[in-house]
Length: 184
Image (cartoon, rainbow, N blue to C red; front, side, top):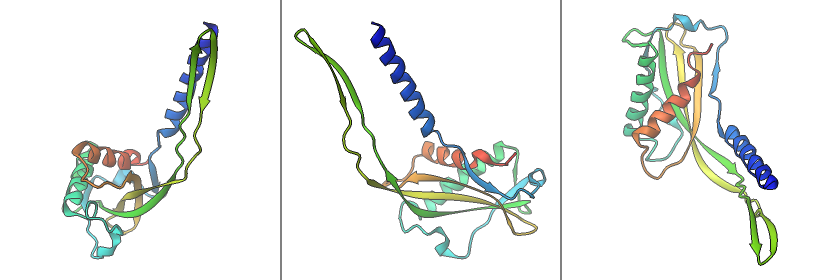
């Protein structure tokens, strides 16, 4: 009985460690000299350069994806007290880039069994494979409307999809990007 309690405790500690490693902090960068308290309004700014998105994928390089992403980011900004304006304090823009991430899956199985009057333990860990998984980096920029300089950037990676993102997935992507805005 004592041994099985230790194993349960060890399994709980391992799972907590794995889950905490999966939680990612917001990925942002910002100008430390910028006064973010001055920004009260925003407007979307569109690039004249169509190559800026850098993703040749009909799911991501689509007006429908753009509308969904802009709507979710705008909703978050409005909920945080910013206003949409024709004369904004800052412009928001976004772009995307392709990324490949190496994925090293680790599957470990631990078993305990009995056969007749003999007990046995088994630990199974398959060979680690080097797999590639296609991802897209979605980047949102905040640009000061007076100086036209970048003051904040947030980004997240999302797995390349063969079907459009659902509304809840778009909410998650937008919330993850804006988790660190405005910086403190």
